[in-house]
Image (cartoon, rainbow, N blue to C red; front, top):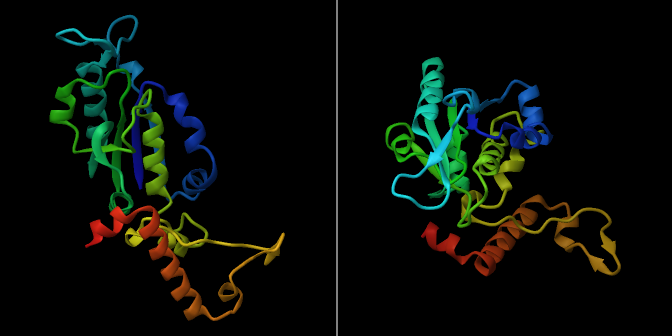
Length: 227
């Protein structure tokens, strides 16, 4: 999979993309992530990429021309399955969306900044708008990193145990069940006997029951969505 990211602050993405699972995915050649600095596409001597909003109001807006020039150049190099804009008013990112995007070949993510981007870019280039929650951050770089992480870990071969992703929270609209590790008893706190039994079918039944119970308690809305 190839993912391009457009940003005015590429340094914000260096750490999230350069460590742990995403680093290994790129080292294996399973995922290629290229971060593009918008600044070289800026206008004039100062490479301007933002300006005041027409009609007044606080905050700066990312300009149409630098974004269009950057997008046109990237689109000339490859066909994108989706051009995604990270924005608080986008569709809420879910595990299902991450699952679907992980099956794509080429994605382009636009990390907004300032007060947002010129609406004409949204109208003529963007094919999907995503939000990671009902709150506002300083820019779209961290949400872009979240999206890449959510997608990247689902690519076959990225995780050492590929079945691990199948039991994550939100797969099948359920939260993950409780997990335990050694020691089996600590300060009198014991691991459930069923997990020590070696009875794999019984353990799976217990995990499914626990996942359902935890979802009913903490996120009943997930069960409503599944109905």
